[in-house]
View 1 (cartoon, helix red, strand yellow):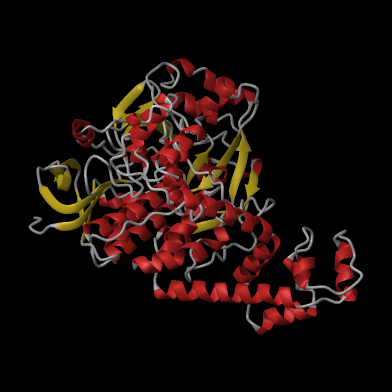
View 2 (view 1 turned 30 degrees about the vertical axis):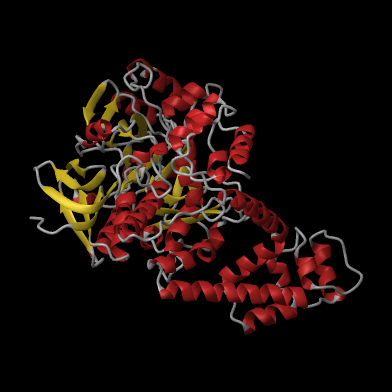
Amino acid sequence: MFEKEYDVIVVGGGHAGAEATAAAANMGSKTLLVTMNLQTIGQMSCNPAMGGIAKGQIVREIDALGGYSGIVTDKSAIQFKMLNKSKGPAMWSPRAQNDRMRFAEEWRLILEGTPNADFYQEMVSGLLVEGNRVVGVRTSLGIDIRSKAVVLTNGTFLNGLIHIGEKQFGGGRAGERAATGITEQLVDFGFDTGRMKTGTPPRVDGRSLDYEKMIPQPGDSIPEKFSYLDTPVLKEQRDCHMTHTSELVHDLLREGFDRSPMFNGRIKSIGPRYCPSIEDKIHRFADKNAHQIFVEPEGWNTVEVYVNGFSTSLPEDVQYKALKSVKGFENVKFFRPGYAIEYDYFPPTQLKHTLETKLVDNLYFAGQINGTTGYEEAASQGLMAGINAHLKINEEEPFTLKRDEAYIGVLIDDLITKGTEEPYRMFTSRAEYRTLLRQDNADLRLTPKGYELGLASKERLDSMEEKQRKSDDFIHFFKKTSFDPEEINPILERVDSALVRQSDKLFKVFSRPKVSMDHMLELESVSHFVAENDLGREVLEQAEIQVKYSGYIEKEKNNADKLHRLENVRIPDSFDYSKLKSLSYEAREKLEEIRPVNISQASRISGVSPADISVLLVFLGR
C-alpha cells in the first residue's frame, strides 16, 4: 500500500497534528497524516471555543506565520469577544465560540485541499528506528510506512483511561479507543514518561434548559476576528449564558465523593490547575457557596450544549442529580455525562527547542504528549514541529522563536527548560515581554518570518507591510503636527486632564492616559488625515498603542536586547558540568539533564541560581 517513502509522517489528527501536517506539506514535504479516525480531524474534544487569555495571542501568531487555526476559527465562529478590554492592550485577548461540527469540517477541507498531504486511517502501534534515527511507523495491521521524519501528536490517546465514578475503561476520547504500543517502545529507547489527567463536563440538550433563569452573555457589538487574511466577520452571533451552582448543588455533589475516582485513589495523576473539576473546586474552595457555570451552544443549528465550569468524573447519577439543581437546569436532559481521562505524556525536557527529541533523531513531539493542555498550545507546537521536521530533512537551519518574539517562544522555552509536572496552560503572566507580544501586532512580529519559511503568502506580507507603513506614517503625523490650544482644551476639560496654554505637538497630548483615539478624531487635522489616507480600525489601534505605550515598549526592547547578549554565549554540546565543582549539586544535575544551548537558556532552568550562571560565565571566559 505504501511503496514510496514519505518525507514526514504525522501521527494524530487533532489540533497539533493538523497544523503539523499543513506546515510540512505547504513547505514542500510529502506528508502523511495517520489518524485513528479521519472523521475527527480537528475535533474540539472539550469546549467549542478558541482563544482566551494568552491563547488568543497564540492563535494570532499561528495565523501570522501561515498556519490555519485562525482561518478555521473565523470560518466556524458563532460568537466573538475581546477579553480584558478594561486593561491595557498587552492583556487584550481574542476569544471565539465555534460551531464544533463546522470547525472540524473546515480543518478536513483545508487539509484535503493541500497538494502534498496524504491521509490514512489506522492506529500507529510503534516506530521504525534504525540506529538512533526514526525511519517510519508501524500500524496495528503490521504495515510499515517509511519516512524521513515523524511527528507524534497523540493527544490523550496514549494508554488513555476514561473514568466515570467507579467505572473505568480504555479510551482516548468518549467513543474512541486508546492508542497502545508507542509508550512502551519509547520507554525501551530510554524516554521518561508520566501520567496526566484532564476532564470534560456533561453535554446536554439545550431544549431542556430554561434560559430565562440565566444571564445572557452576548458577543462584542462590533466583533473582530482572528486571521489577518480576508476571512468572514460575524454579522450575527449566538449568545452564551451564565448561571451558578449553589450550596444545595455542592451538597449533592459531595454525596458522591466517596465514589469519585479523584478522591478514592483511582486517579493518581495531576489535572490542570487552572481548569479544575467541579468536585475539585468544591473541595479546594470550600468557603465559596457558588461557582459560575457558562452555558455554551455547540453550533448554529445543533441543540447540544457544553456546560463550561462543570467538568467532572463523578458517577453519572450524581452528575445528573446535582446539575438538575442548578438554576435553569431543572428539566435537563443529558446527551452524555462528564468524564476524566488519564493518559501518558513525556516530560518535555527531553526535547530540543525545535521539538525534536534528544534521544531519537528526526522524531518530534507536539501537543499533550509534551504535557500541555489546550487546543491553542497544541496547535502552535504542531506548527513548529511540522516546520522543523521539514527543515531538518532538507538540511536547513532550524526555526525557533525567542521569548520576546512570540508567546509560542515562551511556551516552548518554558517546556524545554523548566519541564512540567502538571498540564501546562499559557497565560499572559508567563511572558516577561507581554507589552511586545500583543495580539494586535502578531502579524508585524511574525509574518516576515512566515514568508521566509514559505508558509505565509505574499498576500499576507503585502497586507502586513501596508499596515506597518500606514501606522508609521500616522505616528509621524502626530509627532510633526501641532495643535491649537483652543481646539484641544475642550477635550482635555471633558476628560479631566490638565489644560494647555500654548501650542505643542499632537503626540504629546495624545500620550496622556485619558485621551483616546476617539478624542483625537474630533480634531479636524486628524480626521482629515485618516480619511485622506484611508486608515482602517487596525491601523488606528496600532498607532494608538504605539503612541501611548512607547516608553514601556522601548524598555522591554532594551531588556530583550540584554537577554540576547546572553544567548550569544554558547555552551558546547559536549560540555562536562561535573568539572565545575563550584556549581550547586542541583544545578549540575539539571544542566546535565537539559543540556542548554546557551547561557540565556541555562539561566531560566528551575534550580539554576544566578551564582551558578556566574560560575559558567567565568569558566566560558566571559
